Length: 630
Image (cartoon, rainbow, N blue to C red; front, side):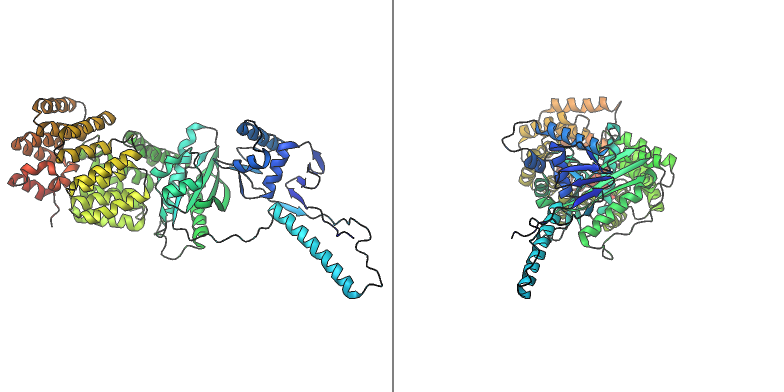
């Protein structure tokens, strides 16, 4: 006698019922005309309910390797037909979510309705009275066991229960990939980027977690690389990715936490909120991910944060736009400042917008990205940072901006170091704070400490050439010119679009007496960044020490002409005169740089281009007045 078999359970979701045995989809008891690939896709999604099913997995399940079709088009068409049958929408899905760059997920609640067992033989369960009781019990036990196995297999197939998976190793590093904008409006891209940025900022509060910075994360926008590839490149264990859909005054956010090395989903959740609640939503998503990583947030593991205050939705929208343009510095700085100011006009107590203003103004007056005189921008940066900290003393970026001003404009070295340390205490995952603190340590002649900070910044933001090339800059001030060359070439290979490696190569070649190679590198840097006057000055300095005085004179004349319409730091002119050997003029221009509060002056003590002036009392007096005082 053959053992009895059991039918697979029917699955109910909303008004629908999926009969796996019959291969039918019914709505309120009425059969829906759905067959072929759309029906097979539904079956696969239900089997893996609440999990992401990749497009590659659907290809393998539904399209054999010897099938020659336009897979992407066929899959999109099949999913669209399935959504039509369910009355579902890709923008506001009830059942099937699109997971950008990955695949799809069935997210609705599923109920199971087991079907009664049907015996293949009506007599199969009848035991002869003459059979021993033990035999009857044994047969009954076997039948029950067979039914249990069949039901268990069905539940496993449907994904209702799953076998225990190996534990995920402890997670100590994570990247938030750019959230996808599913609003159907390219102008809302800033909103998705803003969500990515603020989630990175919130996760960065976890002191024991290394969080990859926004600059590096944004390099993967639209990438076709797999998560294991990204995890290997960034040396991380976990990845967060998701999407944002904004419709009117509502926002829908889908987020997923995955174990990077094997693309294993660890957690997924969708949220829908009023636009006014997005700040609280970001905190909720971040906190949930923290719990998934650690089980619970340990006391002291999170830096102190101020209470979340309601923010005017339009003010927050301006703030997110400001962040979008701050990330595109230096060309986006002025536009970003405009949006931060608009946010503050709508909400004068918005501390984060003040912090964004402080960062932007400090950067605009810096030697690296500076386009305005320090006396015009640094006081504004300081005032914005102080106002931000009055409203929320836990904003690490406001402390970092204040520290930058303390160092480069006030020349208050003790206050600068205090603020840098406070910034890193609040957010040890901020690459800008580590990078700027490394600048402080370089200016103070504390090269080993500076190197350590610079390496931390590079680990947090490995794809930002400006941070990676800082190692070469450190070697330059330490007199290790061969290391400058090696590091610059390494960065150049990874970021051929960056002018920084060419600039540092030029500095190193000049100090090694390889003047033509230095000139070639400075010319390349100038072509790539034509408004960086410090690059033009470096080129003029090399021409001068190579005894190409006519070329040096032409560059001096060019900078003089440029200064009529564009800010040219006095320090840049002093660099060229130091190369010509005219020490008197070099010192005169350094005094002008002092009056300008030039941000270059904090590095003057160790700048090898001024070696011929080092013993001059006037030069030493400038160094003394700038500091440090001890």
